[in-house]
Length: 313
Image 1 (cartoon, helix red, strand yellow):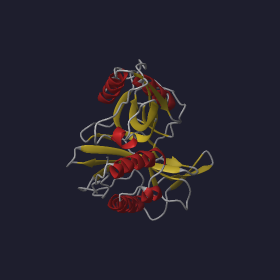
Image 2: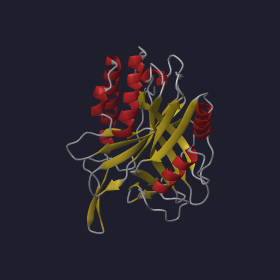
Image 3: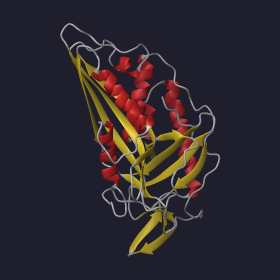
Image 4: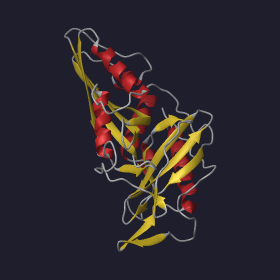
């Protein structure tokens, strides 16, 4: 279970801090920085308060007012595991330091920004995306890949005083477009994807798939699919920092008369308590932070994910 300690100790926003939203004319379109420096602390405090309430209740429902999309699906799965295994979830254990806030400019909603934080106690870094659908909607956490705290993130290019965004299909000057990079990484998780640098997450997923494939009297298959990329920033070198969400499905078909189970206390056991005696699936969601260079192989800088559903017979 991932926890997020989001008490702000320091905040750096790439927009000027002032009483009004900074605006400028560009190609006759009025744009504005996604978030004001004065608002960032309240966003994190609200998230932390709601999450701690959910943890105290061991109920993921309150999270829907501060999370959305894949993050909410992953956390809901984690809460389900904790509930079924009668396991407590820790609240925020120590303050985190927000090292940077990367706020692009937008001409219309939705707006989003990236917060880079670190937790020295756990040596965990988080590169999170908060999004707002309209002026009357709250900021919601929609992406939260985790890194080791000392990993070096690439510098982000500025454009008109804000972090420069990259369109999903834009591959100009890069090894891949943001969407192409997500698709390539998903392919690599299935033993393809020559354009990806091999990392610990890839090795772990391939090893898990190989172990499942060796189960006696079981036919195992696994698929990976990249969802549509919605958040990407231009790096100083002309590449991109991409937030990719991947869907993974593990399918098991068991020989008649046999049953497969998972170790007590495992997330898989929580969703498939009786095991699988005929067929079953486990579904996962993983968020991966990818660095796309101008030339060369795509590199994963962090990930966050878990099992979100299971069916077995």
